[in-house]
Figure (cartoon, rainbow, N blue to C red):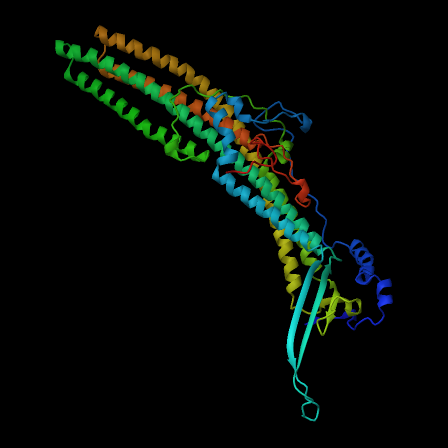
Length: 524
């Protein structure tokens, strides 16, 4: 049940004194109430809780970086700007900027961001009155019959018309509309951070694909060299087999070893093609349109200052997304609470009406009306309290999501740091193992030619050498991938600044901005 108490003032009869109407500046009389309306609006409150970001437990230092102490976060140097240049790879330098303008995942996130900004404009529109103009003209046949039922002399044709401007305005006295704007603005900022996160994720994916491609090329070179070495060994064994100085099994072993290496080399072509296709898609191109030249030069392993854990809260776009979603959910509580309060509306009409139509715009035909209404729900079966409970539960879920996102961010960085530390130790051990395996294969080959060992010893030593070299290459790949992951988990080059979506004039998108700008470049 709803009560609709209405207070209204209206004047719809014709003004009989043209002079008086001119003194009232016909059409301005309703405007006398505008200052009162504005005063009511400005004096209105905003119900609902004010937003404060919940506290999270932030460690003073990274566990995997012993010896680090709490420092000034502003002095911590993390990845800045075009972070991929630290890898010193020309392919990365060429392709990474294309992600912001051509990647379709980024394009989708950009469209979602534009939609969120439009929702803010929709919410802001409710702060202002709705103004309309209505014009009408009517021609009708009027009866001339008297009350006794007799005609007084034929039908009468009547022309009538009106031209009126009308205004309606629901005053945001309790702040419901302003809370809606706050909610939509926070949602838009969350969408902006999501856009930045999508862009960073695709850039990291591109870096990973390029690293994988470079390692595959290096593996191709390694296997190519191995195949040539096995061919040389097969020629030696074949000559000795012809001379009858070695058993036939040595020839079979050498041939099988070569064929297996050739098979592995061919198989790498599949992986290389897939990485090349993935790179093309990440920069928004058809796979058939991109061919990447072979290059076995691995990217440089960058040195990445991790800063202190507290900087994660400002540098990661996914954390910013979760925080802005939390702010949006908090504002939604105020929207739900505002439903408990009455809705206050104003309406006004100003114009001319006349029958017959001639002289419609004469001052004597000027009419106006002004009305106000207040509507309050007395009983709704618990609907409003349920909406408030829903909003509060949604906020609590957003808080848990925010804290969980922060914890996951800390976990990811710790994983990256531990991976880099341990892989560095493993790489050092493998470098020594590679040197020993090369030396061991050479010794086995010499001993075989001297006739002191069979070819199985040579094949085993050569297989050990190849396996050790491939393991070392894999560790190098893991170190590079971990470095790229650490850059992403530290937020890349994102500055952490979000636009104030509640003021559209402050939201601008620079089509020429770099991939790490606050407002991402509109993808094509």
